[in-house]
Structures are given as structure tokens and as C-alpha cells.
Image (cartoon, rainbow, N blue to C red; front, top):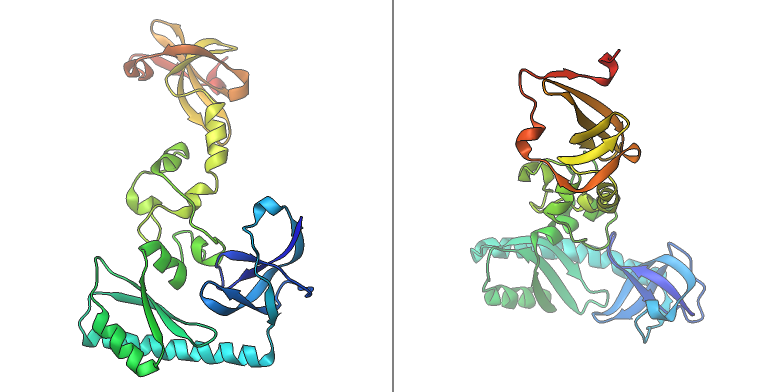
Length: 294
């Protein structure tokens, strides 16, 4: 077991583990740590905790110190510099007529570099832009191209559900989503209805994907032959969440009955499938609902 703390550098960013050393830290504390990008100030989101060695990537770097008032003042100064850098960079992009969209600016804690995030359809020659920004700020300049999902995570917004975007409010990483998840949940496959603000499939499709995958496995498929208390019949429709099934029972050549029962009360006939035309009910067939039977 190893004692670690979890530190986050962005509001909804990834959580990184560090060794607390001699410090006993709690959620909300600000600490100075060394990362691949140099010294950074982060917020503790997970206090001192013992975890399995296999869950961490060794060696862990130790916390340098608890952030002082001077460090916090430096952070506030960096935020002001980021706002200024963003405004100037945007003006220079227009000046050089570059086909790129600036997303945000980020200043390193130790004031060693400025990092700009942008989106673009293709490759952009921004060498002249970097030279001018370096001359203005006297710092190392980096421009990093990101995708539309990263742009949405940084900028934020409101989803079609009326709530703050998942990626901007609580998701630390993007989860893989697929059109199969929408099919399993019986959602409309209209791209406008299952796509998020970024234009990609909504991340929330993953939230209930495992539940639907399990429920779909234990309920008969439409068109399968099942055995019920009223006899053998054809599954006409299913309600996955309620685990209810509508079954067409053939009473005679010119009479059919539709019943609705729990999926747990039926027994599927393995390997038996009926043709699609048998699922349709002809106009001269009398359908009797469950509640209409005498």
C-alpha cells in the first residue's frame, strides 16, 4: 500500500496522484507540485489515502510545499496574464488572416511559457504568429491544436437536456461511445438528436449502456416465438426498461389475440424466428386485447 493524494489542475481535469511526504492534506488544499510541464499549483481533491501499488505509476513525485499567499497571488497574476494573452493572440490571428479558432490561453505557474489551444480544419502555418507572440511576452510560446470534443470541454455550455455539459461539469476523461449504444436504448438514430454540442455522439449514451446491454440479453427479441400461459405466440414489441413483452397469440385462422406480460413469465423457443410478414396483422383479423377478453 502507498499513501497518495489526488491533485487536479483544471476545474474538471484529470486527477493526478502525488506522494504527500510529511504533509497531511485534505480536500480543497492548494499545493505546489512538479509535473512534466514544470512547477504547477493544483487543488487537492483526494486527501491522504492508502491505495494498492498496482493502481499507481511509480515513481511518485512528492508535494513540494503547501501553496503560500505568495503562490496564490502568483496564480491570480497568471490568470490576468492569460486573459491579456488570449486577447492579443486573437488580434494577431486576425492580423495574419489565419484560419484557426483560438480556444483558451494558459500560463505556466513559474511564468516560463504560454500555451494556446486552438481548433482548425487542417494544418496551420503559425510560425510568424509564434515569433510575434514570443517578442511581445518574452516567454516560450506553444500552440496546441485540439479537437471539437476538447474545445467543448474547455468552453462548456448547456446540453439538449438543459443541464451543464457532462464533459465540462464532471467527466474527467472522454468515454468511448458508439451508435450501437443508441440502438440498444431504442433511441432515435437521427444525428441531430443523439449528438452533443460538439457534433459527436453524446457522452451520456454511456451512462446507461451497461444496464441496457444486460436487460436486452434477458428479454426476447421482436419476432421470436415464445411460450406463454395462453400458448405459443410471436413477440410483437418489447419494453426493455419495464421488462414487458407484447405477444400475438393465434387463436384460429381468422382470430388473433395480443397479450402483454412480464418477460420473466415467458419462455423463449430457442432458434425459432418468424418471417416479418407474420408479425403484421391483416385487416380481416380480429385482435382482442387482454382487457377485452371475457
